[in-house]
Image (cartoon, rainbow, N blue to C red; front, side, top):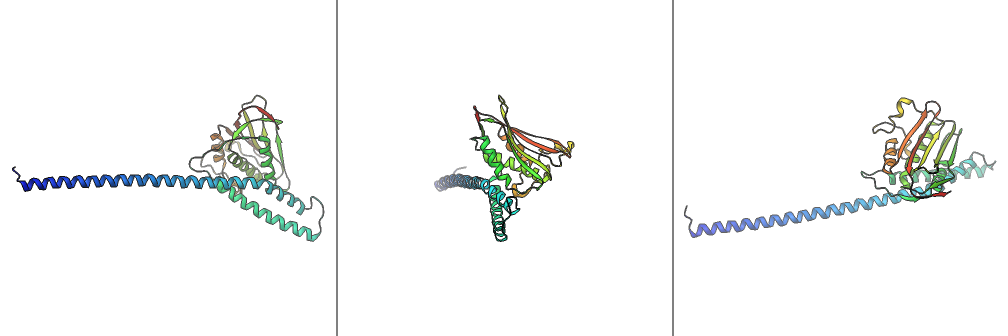
Length: 280
């Protein structure tokens, strides 16, 4: 079909207009993609910043919980008269101080829990750790926790340990969860917090044993499975044994339990060693 000059001009104008529109669309698409990249980067930076602040809060809370736990334990002994008789006005002052210290400890527990919540992808921060010193700090804090009057809390450590690399906050979470379970289900006897190492071994074993109610043999295999219901006091984090297993395995370790119903339980986990043995 023959097209005159005016028709040809219209077609050319339409083509040019289409090209201009396409160029504008491409420009807007590129701008939108760039904006999306900026938003994604900004969101990632915001999430990382928030995560770092949360982890810092949890770390500071843990550093303060240990010495404050010792204060609570000492004030508790004073209030109960285990360190000698006190005048009524002095006892009233001690009880008031004990109440304030426990409230502060609860607040720090809340901060530690918030700083310890597991994100979708856990970013471990392993450090060279003096196992003996680390365990003594856990023990000092545990002394300030409420447990039955008929229960004795002990700490047992091997004479020496190798260098162990682990995320102290995450391992603290595991140990505090195990201690919380023992505190809850042990009404008399003893609870032992321990770390053990045999010369030449390629792992250090951490654990909590007790003389509590024990666990039926048929249930022991379920404890570390996801969706299994394990009751843990909320004030120590409520992590559950499943998360304990996941944290230990992230360190390249393993966790298990030995228990006899009616006689007690021994929850333990092993972490791989790094470097030479050092005397405690």
